[in-house]
Length: 144
Image (cartoon, rainbow, N blue to C red):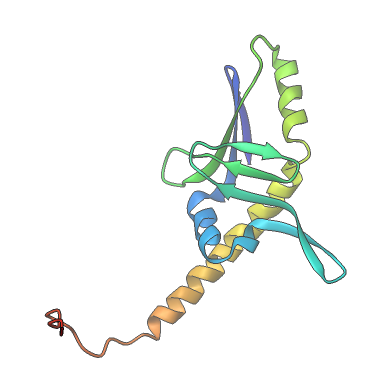
């Protein structure tokens, strides 16, 4: 994870790839969450998601709204700073804004790629077991 301040914005670039988040959103949304169990009930403590241009963060989750430049496609979060903050006050603001969630994001930076790989491997295994028996060259006529 990398955090940079540029002018009046701060940018968090995660080690999680957007394609991995999207894959888990589709096939295993629970892979994007850190949960706790209370008795028989499992609850989300923190969850991440990706939605283009919809960057949001709270103590319960983070929505990445952008993708890093280049071929890696890492998830990015962009936030806005107040105008005129000194460098130290800007850093303190970002630390206050993100301090409660960074530990969760770091944990997910380890688990999300593994969960996405497991899905890709399972899909590849399934595809390898599918056989195509015949080829349809024409659409059958409708009976009516």
